[in-house]
Image (tube, rainbow, N blue to C red):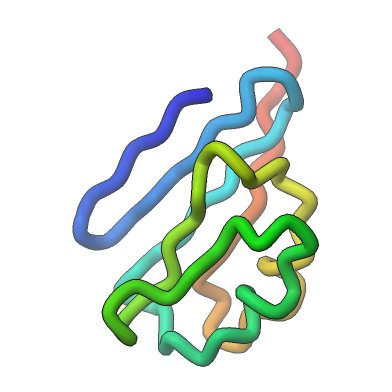
Length: 81
């Protein structure tokens, strides 16, 4: 697993699957919808400001991205190499 986190973007790369979970923190409204959608409790709201993905728990299922009202979470499929 590879994780990159900056003030605005957190990207979690799933080495076993062919997906990435990208969260754009500046778009997040900290509503908590993603935290309730995640079946593995891999997302939390940090300091009431933005969602944070736990890279050890996230499997890239996409349930959070499908329900995010701010479109702050995206699942990116990696191309086959």
